[in-house]
Image (cartoon, rainbow, N blue to C red):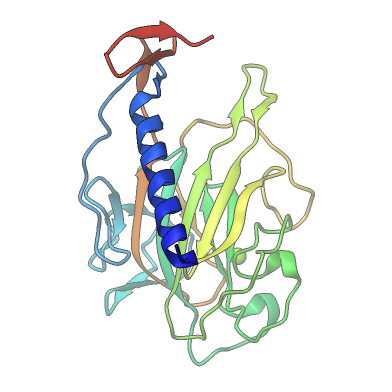
Length: 264
Ligand code: MG
C-alpha cells in the first residue's frame, strides 16, 4: 500500500466517522422562539436598502431643517451657511453617508474641507480633507472630535467621494440624569475599519472636555457648516433593532429519534 493510498483511506475513514458522529450526536436547542428576521432588499453597491430612511437621494433637501442656504448641485448637497438637521430623530442606527472635499483644495489643517456628521446632534465624527493635510490627529477625518483619531487614514483625494458607514449605539441615561451606558461607534471609511466599537467619553466640543448631558433617546443627525463647501450624497439611515425572540422553554438537547432532554 503506497503512502498516497493510505492517506486517501485514512481521510475516508475519518470523514465517515465525523459524519456518523454528527448523525448520532444530540442537537443543542436554546429554547428560544425567534421571530423571523424581516426580509429586505439590499441596495446595489452602497445604495439604500428597502427598509432605510433616505435622507438625501440627490434630488432635494426635504428631509432636513435649516438647509435653506445649502444647494443641490449635480446630485450632491453642498454645504452653505447653517448646519442642517434631519426632520426625523434617530437613536441606535446604521448611517451611510458619502462626502467629497472641495476641489481644488483651499486652506490647511482644520480649515480645509471641514464639516462633520453629528450623531444625535451632539457627537461629531469629523469630516475633513485629510488627504495630504496635517492637523491634530483627533481632529482629522474619521476622528471622534477631540477624543480619538481614526485607526488609519483611508482618505480619497479632494473631488473623489468618500464613504462613511457608521454603526451608532446611543448613550442611555438614568432618570436622575446620570449616565447608564455610554455611546459606542463603529465606523468604516471607504471600506476600511477606522473606529471599532469606540466608547465615547461624551460630547465633542472644541472648548472643553467631553461630558454627557442627559438627552432624548432620539435626536436628529446634524451636518456641520464650517465654512467650506463640502458635498454630500447618498445619505440613508436604518434604525437598529435587535432580533426578537421569547424563551419558551429551557435550553435542551434532542437526539436523532426526536427525544428531548435537558442540558446538564
Ligand atoms: Mg468638523
